[in-house]
Image 1: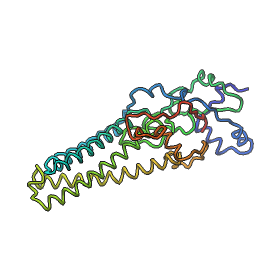
Image 2: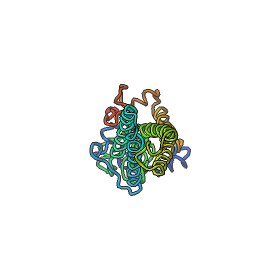
Image 3: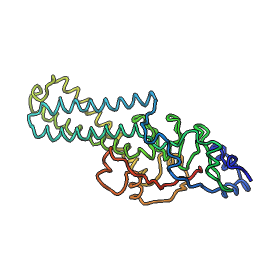
Image 4: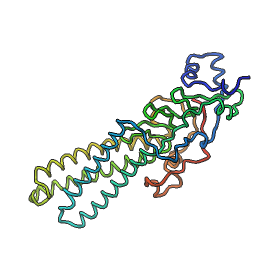
Length: 313
């Protein structure tokens, strides 16, 4: 009888057998059983600690994201709202825009600094595999890149250098992978950025109309050429990010409803997990039951402590 260590196979090696093997090889693979293991066992020890990826490109993109939001704040406040003669208009739009911008930046911070669902690194040891008490016909796969036991629906990220549970993609704008633990924050980030982009775009249009009807020197505290340049840049930024984040928000919601990550769709991986309703999939990401906390980046969703994962690919 083989020891548990002999039943821990390299992921690529296992896939090669599955693709090239026929007859007896196929029968052997069909006899393999998935091993349900509690989520607590495969949760990284850093899940509750601060998570930050030291990637130069990602850090630059994250800083640019914050700078663009701050630029929009500057133009909205100092070019359009403060010089406005309508106090109610300034207070209502200023409160709404700043609230959405704050939620967008908070969502970005949570998406960037939350462990996306990293599998413990280097846990594919002889002692750990023996502790799983594998039965005959059961196998586990290890990732050859981070030397970790790889659960089902986990993929290795070359930037994070870890296997991530339910990895959707690596986003340089949040300098992190979008995975099981931070997908909610990424969805909220795209939603709030799309909302403030739309809001800024509408205000720019109204401000242009107001300035055309009135004296340009009175509709802004800046000179007319500076005002036009600042408004055009904000208009271009708002339109660009409105389109980009709206598309990202739509694809993320579709991915959640279908319970299929972006990588799984790209690779057209065979579904080996239980099919659930769209509402159940939404609650699995945002928490349950439905409440206003779904829209809060400060609320940590309960993904279900009793959830199990299959250690097979």
